[in-house]
Image (tube, rainbow, N blue to C red; front, side, top):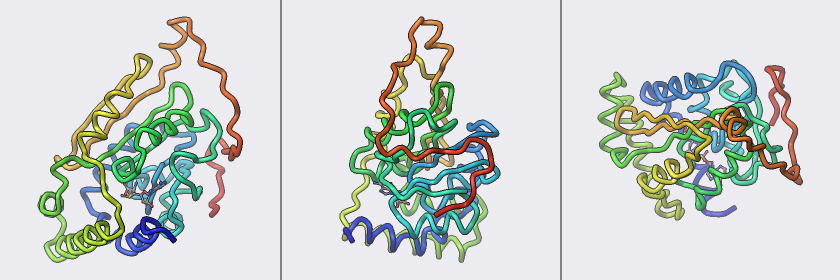
Length: 248
Ligand SMILES: C[S@@+](CC[C@H](N)C(=O)[O-])C[C@H]1O[C@@H](n2cnc3c(N)ncnc32)[C@H](O)[C@@H]1O
C-alpha cells in the first residue's frame, strides 16, 4: 500500500468526525440545489459521501480509490453504487452522467487538470458539473470558528478540530500535499469554455462552489456538432433512472 493510500484509509476512520457538521451539510444542500432532480450523478472523490449526502434519493455513483471511505458512503446511504478507481480514469463511458460532482478532491490530486478533463468527458451535453474546493481561509482555526458559528457544540467542535489536526500531521508524513486554493480556482475558471455557463458561490468563507453546464443549445446554435468520440476501452455501463442497486 502506498503512503497516500494508507493516509486515505486512516483518514476514513475519522473523516465524518472531522467533517460531518452543519457547515458541510450547508455545502451539500447547495450542491444538491445545483443538480437536476433525477438521472445519474457521479461524485468524483466521493469519500464518505458527505458532498453527495443531500442527493441520496437519486442514483449517485461514488468514484474513489479508497475502499474504506466508500464503504462508509454506502453504509450511510449517501451513494447508491461505488467505483473503486482513480478519478482521472473512471472507466465510465463518455457522456454517461447527467451531473458530476467533484468536492474537495482536485486540491489533493496530483493532476487536477486531468480530474476536470475526466469530469467533462463523462458529463452529457446540457449536464451540470459542480466543483467544490477549499479557500485559503480553510485553516484549522478558520474551520473551527465556522463550525462554532454554524452551531456545532463546543465539545463536538473541539473533537472535530482534534481529528483534523491529527490528519494534518499525518498528511505531512504521507506526502499528501494539497495544491494552493488559488491554483484550483483559476483552473476551474479557465475551464469555462464558450459553451459553458459558470456560477460561483463562496460558503462560510471556507468553500468555493463552481457550477458549469455543458450547453447543447450553444453548440447547436453555432452549428457545431459535438465531436464523435471513441468509446472508452474499459467502459462501465451506468443504468439511467433510480433503479441502480447498491453495489460494491
Ligand atoms: C478530502 S476527501 C473529499 C471527500 C468528499 N468529496 C467530501 O467533500 O467530503 C478526498 C477524497 O478523494 C479520494 N482520493 C484521493 N486521491 C484520489 C484519486 N487519485 N482518485 C480518486 N479518489 C481519490 C480520497 O480517498 C478521499 O476520499
